[in-house]
Image (cartoon, one colour):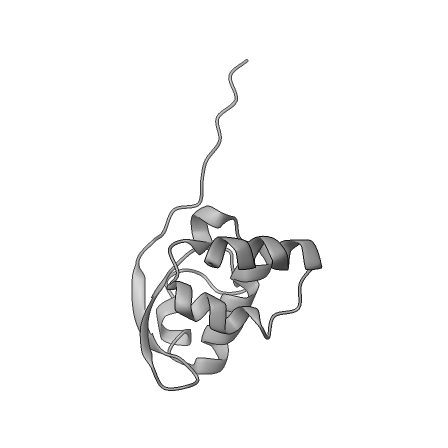
Length: 97
């Protein structure tokens, strides 16, 4: 029996303003915010609070294939304020250096 794996695919990107006011391009992935579908995501990500929550959830749960699509500077900025397992934090710090 053959096993087939499907990997998460980026469905686009949207330019957003971070809470500090900088413009950045954020990739759109289904399932990071479970209550939003990908079609609604660009509109909601224009709110800096939702953008921050989206990025924090990605840092907590998304695989590296997803995280490497995000701007590294933005991920580093969000990593400090994201609660997660210490092992995952160390791994992400290493990968983002």
